[in-house]
Length: 241
Image 1: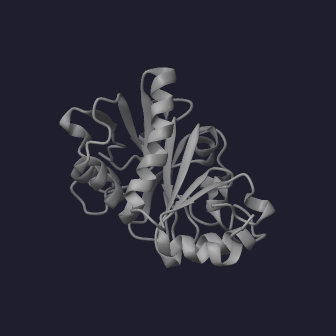
Image 2: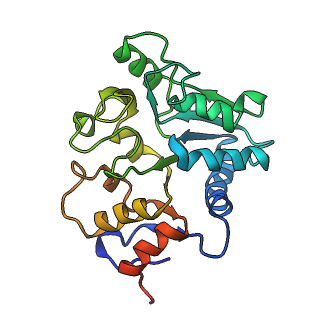
Image 3: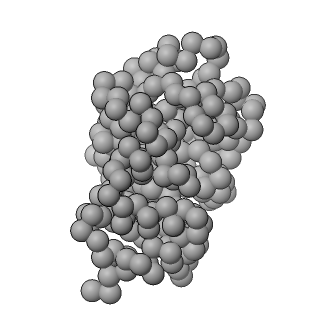
């Protein structure tokens, strides 16, 4: 769908009005994955956390989406908890996408001690300079990964990962920085539900900037809405031309 806004005129937008959201998201993401594999023989994918992604990863596992593809998975942000903790993004991936079955490789952040600076630096050092496919979801405050509004992490230009303290539970987290997002070849923003649609609608019309709405970092990338989120945005910005 095409949005009537100069601010996001370079953004590719898709909404699942006549088909399942997981099907649509997989179709668009798979195109980017296959292109990377053709060009490089493998695809690096950075995964997002949260309930939005959980359903998509279950769909991928059920349909063997990445079978016989050389996939290497990374985690975009992590809560500083154990893998078995229900708030662990790496743990959620292992329980849903199951890359440990041998069909893919997952490099989890591995929060094994309290030296979060060291963990962030080590994980960043092992990250490719450019991720092929980066998945992000958006919070109701406009955050992506664990880049929250007015966070110092938004100003980081050298490191790829930094530890942060969130206003949300769990407070201690490790997140990618804008550097990683800007360097990624393909970025997909996954937008599910009416509340998230309102966030995007507000961002399109806002002049607040990245500090107030970190989701602005993914303007001119690819956004994939479910029906309820897409309806909110379309009602205000749909361009019939």
